[in-house]
Image (tube, rainbow, N blue to C red; front, side, top):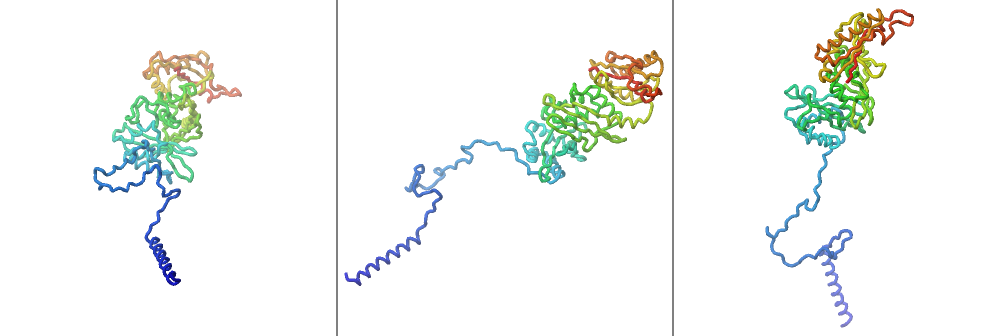
Length: 452
């Protein structure tokens, strides 16, 4: 092979190599490997069976594995509402929509799991889904109370039967950014000895167990306004609040014809884990007043532990004017505790119309339990002889006893005693020795002790 022939020969070989390389580069498809992957089969994964396979039929088609197979059952949590509403009106509108549809599940979704505890859900459901109850058309919502950082609204339900009403509470709180959230759904009071299908309403037995302080105040104030001594007493601590004090508050509110204010009747002035102070606001045709309620924790339950109603008494004194008969239905007993007081005209042993109204309330308390006994102490001012005043004080005590017996109280339930002028409440004379008519008016009295 000469030089020319060799060049041609090797040129042909080189050209063939170039053509082969170009062809391979054009037709082949590179395999994309993921991170940390290789093209070496895994020992756990068998290589693909390249043998011919029979055609796929319904019999040999691989069955799909159930989606949840092998997984534990998970209870889905209650859905959470959107974080806050722009205003209180927006919250109430949303509540009105779900309650109008009687949709309990939608209510849960709206308020969230934390705001609707499991313990009260059956009772809340019984109210929401009850076909006989609907949100009141005239006043579906009432603001019950206001504190520094929250408000309580009543959701009012009524029915064709005017005796049947129901109520839920919705607590609203303001969060960061000015948004309003539903911080809690509550029942006015827990119902004792009643199944969850029984709606709340008058006549059901109530218990203070597991109720918050504001619910106790509301129930207590309603009982006082409605002259329900038994309920008001049951919601009070027996050692901190006397029977006389509860009865005197009922008498004073009845005397002034007071009712709870329709809107925001309660203002929370202090709220701690162990103590709460609430102002209960009243209204009447003659004006407004209020009484203060202190609540404390007793065996894990909230109870009324203090009552102050000096503003109510002041309003009554102003309404009475400057007549000769004093008025304050309660006084402190020097020996401790409180006593109810009825006052008399000068040199009289007959009851005033006000005294008769007070005794009607006392009679209602006494006739509920025949084992209760009251003690009546008669008194007189210093005008007249000692013997005359002793006789007059006994006559005043006896007048009260006879009036109570005429109202249905048993004779054995009333014990009387006269003290004449020996135990004055106020001075009968001024420091200069002159007569003190205002002082004497407070000494012409009979004090009533409820020895329950």
